[in-house]
Image 1 (tube, rainbow, N blue to C red):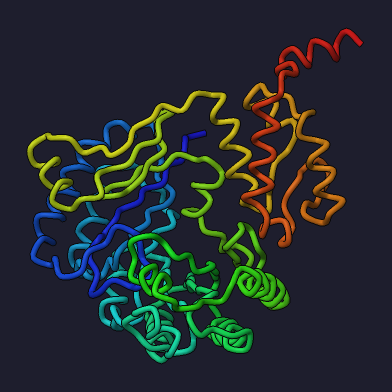
Image 2 (cartoon, rainbow, N blue to C red):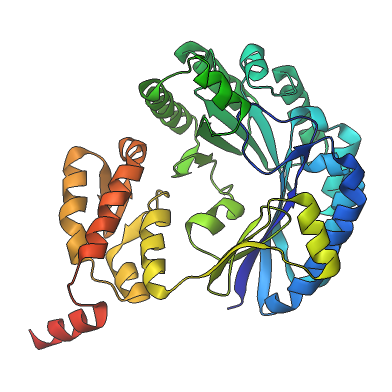
Amino acid sequence: MAKRLGLYIHIPFCKSKCAYCDFYSLAGRQEMTDRYVRALLAHMGETAPQARDYRVDSVYFGGGTPLMLGERDLRRLLEQVGKLFRVERDAEITVEVNPDSVDLKTLKRLRRAGVDRLSVGMQSAVDSELAAVGRPHSFAQTQQAVEWARRAKFRNVSLDLIYGLPGQTPESWRRTLEAAVALEPEHISGYGLKVEPGTPLWSRVEQGETLPDDDAQADAYLAMVDFLAERGYEQYEISNFARQGYVSRHNLKYWLMRPYLGFGPGAHSDFGQRRFSFLRDLDGYIAGVETGGPLLDEDQEIPHSERASEYLMLRLRTTRGIEEWEYRREYYMDFEPLLPLLTEYERQGWVRRVEERWAFTPEGFLRSNQLIGQLLERQERSTLPSTLRYLKTREQT
């Protein structure tokens, strides 16, 4: 069976920066788009031979605001992906869009070019909440964008939502959830607002602005999980929910530790037993491609033992969770040291066990950083036999 690969293409251009955003994106640099597209095309051309043994089953254009590049250049990039890589006929091809960045004509052209999934940055149904974090659109524009997407024959639409926004209340969050579901998306992502250092929102909080606290965010999260489950959206990852058949392949690449290649400044990759990322610098990235100069920001070969830790950290973000013999077979690690903790988590209602799999409950997801940290500490302290020695012991008893 051919190995599967995901591609991520970062488009760092934005109309304006949102108050909470710490992704690598830039406002007011549209004069660089032509050089940037040429750099992306060249970089993909240099990299593609390394992926000749893979079949691409997902392509994701993220940002920034990809349509700031223009749909013509997006189609050009997608066409080149099809020439350079072995793209499967049913590959999931996603473009992130802001509601104010689309129109019907553009969406029809993207759909004809092969884009089959849109990720729409709705964030809230309350215009005052959108304005409070500098979102450049209204909820009415979200409604219009989804309507245009359907008219353009998109059958896979995802909405991004944020809880914990300035001024948000349980009632307004419920209103956002109701409004999102009324648009009948196939997929919904719901994220808690994080105040990142260096962002305008960080400065506002330092100056005394108050936001919904951790307890309020926890209540909003649990309310979202229950609300979406009642309406047919199955949770498959801590922040992601889908109708049957619409789980995002792109999302699962990260959490199931499947290979992916990223292109563009700040883009990350997990490929060839290495994790690496590129410079968070548009000019530096372009110059590096054009001149053969340095491109990498980080580059690390991941030893097998560290992959075992990643298995715990990443798989436990999913509702699929972890499984004893999967862990033993793939990483030659003994599961026994983890069992007392998992059993205690189950008693507390933080973990559920279905047959041989262990996965967090919604209450467990709220504590996942702490609980995963405890499991990793227990794993590191463990001196019990590896799987091979464990199997030998079993054969002798």
